[in-house]
Length: 382
Image (cartoon, rainbow, N blue to C red; front, side):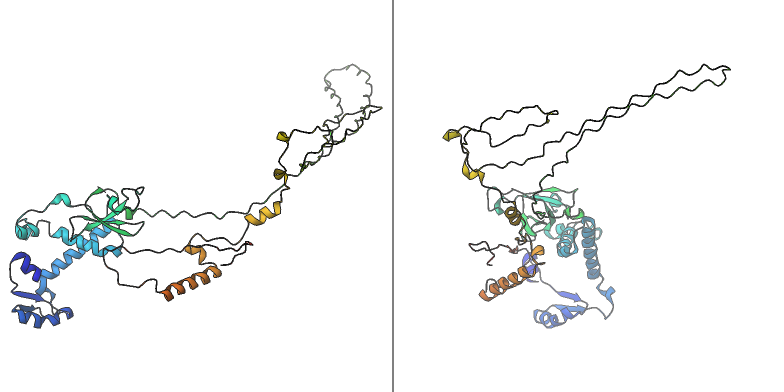
C-alpha cells in the first residue's frame, strides 16, 4: 500500500475482500487509515468477480508455461511470476488494447526483452568463475525475469545453481527439461589379474600312409551275347610296413640365470653311428661353453630377480578399496560406521549452523570423500 502511494502518488480509498482468514485482522488497520473495507457475502464469490478472474488468469497462464516447457512443478513460483509479468504487458480488450503497464506508466513495454519460458540459455559466467581456465558459459534453463534487476533468471540443472545475468544467448527451440537427463558414468570395478601359463601341445605323430585301393571294375554290358572273358588279375602287393614313429623332443623350460659364469670347455664326443631318423628340432643346451662378456655388456643382476606371481595376484585383488560415491560406501557397514563417527564429530565441533533457505541465494554443497589410512606394514589403521 505504501509502495502504491509512493510510486503512483495516489491514496487508497477502499479495499474489497472475501472475508478470508488472512483478511480478518485488517479491519482495524484499514479503519485507522480511513480506508473502507468492503466484504463479499459468504459463499458468494461472484461478488468478488474481478479478483477471482484475475487469479484464475494467473494460475492458468502459469500452468500453461510449465506444461509447454516441461519444467518441473517445483519451479511453479518462477512460472507464476513470469505469468504476472506477461499479463501486465499484454494488451487488454477492456482498456482499448492497451496493456496495464502502458496504462500506468504511460509508455509501451519493451517486447524485445521477452523470451520463451523454459528454453535453453547460455549466460556470460566470466564474473562468476574462480579460475581463468573455467568455461565462459554453460547450458542453463530460462526461468523468468528478476524483479529487482534488469536481467534474466538462469538455472544450471547440473549444479542446481541460479544465475542472474543480462548478457544471455537463447535457443528458444530447445527445452532442456524435455530431454531425459543422461546417466552419470559409472566407474567399472577393476578385476583381479590372474596369470595363466600356456599348456604345451601334445606331441603329434605322422599318420601312416593310406593303402591304395584298387579301381572298381567297370560294369559289363549285359546285352552282349558272348562277353569276352575277364583278364586274369594278380593280387595286389602287400603294403609296406609303416615307419616307426619318430619321438619328438620334449618341450624344455629355460630360466634366466642370475649371473653370467664361465664354465670350462667340455671334451667333444664323437658318435659312432648316425641316427636313422634325425630329430626335427635341435636341442638347445644352456651349458654350452661361453666366453666371458665385457663389463659393459653383462646383464644387470637386479633385472634377473625371480618373478613371484602370487604376490602380484594378491596385491591386485585386494578386496578393501576406497568407494567412489556415497551409494557404494553406504552398502558397506564399516564405511557407514566411519561416516556416522565423522558426522557426530562435525556436530560436536559445531562446524555449521542451519538457517532458513533464502530464495535466489546459492546453497553451499558438501560431498563425502573416502580415503584409507594405512600403517607402515600396509594394514588399514583407519
